[in-house]
Image (cartoon, rainbow, N blue to C red; front, side, top):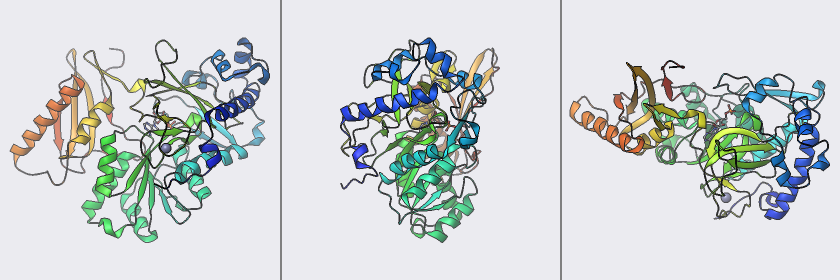
Length: 437
Ligand code: AMP
Ligand code: ZN
């Protein structure tokens, strides 16, 4: 396969040079951090009073982790390293955990960010002749403007359609010959359901590929979207504390997400002991940004669970690849004492072809016990008025789930298109248990 690179020198840089570049950029970031009211005393306490106190990448480990809690403590200006008049934009996290965190950019920060997103987009084979419909939330969420800038940087025609309004999305795709889309995986599945409902033929669209991210999804979901829409789907990982999109992305090999190590230093730690895991093992991803001046962020604990592939990628890029992110450590469900991740349930559901494109996990208290209900839509071809095949399907889903998560769920089947669809990140779990019980 012919691979294309946005910046071949950086993307294929031999590791020793890449690490030397990281060290140089880390020192620059330390210089910025020393200008913030949050990091100056922290770094001082760790004996780091100037960038020259960092002599090797190992010195990073002298710096304490930064947590979401710290971001809240430092809100609103504790992490700002430049005079306010130099910042030109702010973004804020989607706040699924209810804690406001704000990141500021100066104009060079924005330009660099656009470059990383462009690198991701271009690496999947896009070019300036593509038409790119960005079907994700704009506004404070970084996915909208982040991909918008990256698409423009590549030179594609960008349609800033935002999320939701499926009928209009389909109309735009047809009118302008959209070839590439960006959306959450759940929204892509929803679009496909609506296409069928509205009788929109796949052949009437010019779609070739999709970037899917912002929420966890399994390999089976990727394959389902690829099969149903007949496109290539690339996994996109980003987090607002690290700018947003442009942190890690799949190349044309579609086997793990290259984390751009000239822009970020990644560590994988055991979330309990806080020690690094062995290369290749799963743990919590910790990131240090190397490409932003206005808001430095050192050793940020993402809560995302993943690990690195150890073999090099066939595409020739030297930046290491992350495994698909299965979820956050705080997503874990504990049901009657048994631990499980929503992603395990999703994996089971999406591998069953009679299952439809949407599902919802409900956890309730029933007396003293927890009760797990998995509500799932049935695919349009499998939905029938006859109870027997549906009962058999329900039982099959239940036993497969039980084998995977060691919890016996109640399974409810729903007609296609009847479960709620969220415009932003999908809300997959409804946990109504009292919080402190
Ligand atoms: P936000 O800061 O609102 O952009 O949310 C970032 C979070 O979304 C990450 O920490 C992940 O938990 C999740 N996320 C983003 N992209 C992906 C992806 N490709 N796979 C799994 N989770 C993702
Ligand atoms: Zn690759």
